[in-house]
Structure formats: C-alpha cells, structure tokens
Length: 97
Image (cartoon, rainbow, N blue to C red; front, side):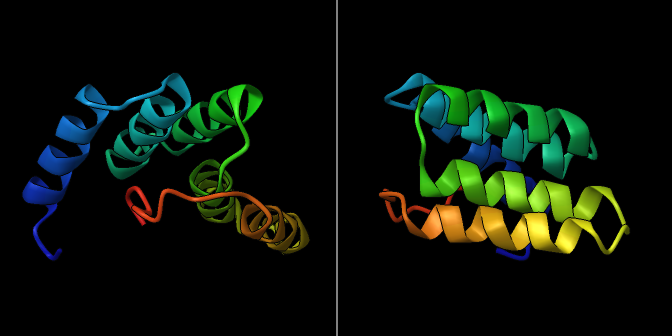
C-alpha cells in the first residue's frame, strides 16, 4: 500500500478483531511505530513476545530496534532477532511489514 491512511485504518481494524492478546499487541506496536512512537512500538513487541513468541512480534521488534538507533552495534542484535523470527510460526499476514 502506498496510502498511509488506508494502511492505518487496516491496522486499526485488524487490532480490533485480533484473535489473541499477543496478536493485538503486535498490531498496536505497528500503529505506534507508524505514528512516530518507535520506543512504544518496541515495548508492545516485547509485551507480545513475553506472552507468545511469534515471527510477527520478533519482526516488529527488529524493525523498531533498527530504526531507533544509528548505533552500528545494534546490527547484530537486529540480525539475531530476525534469526529468532525465522524459528517461529507465522500467520503469514506480516502485520504492518
């Protein structure tokens, strides 16, 4: 989508209809991230991961972490998170990616 308003509306609707708390937290994280609240989005990813490990939560965490700091040392952490993501089941919806 190249229409931010439509993408945001889709995320909001998906959050409202999320089947589980971890899924809802991932949608909330993307909404926060997309509205410029990167740190809060990162926290939602961590909350989701504390409840259930999922590809989507690891991906959100890696994406937000990569964007939150220009520090090159974060690169290894981001790579590690993405490797962890690949080990998890996914609903294949790729929330927000």
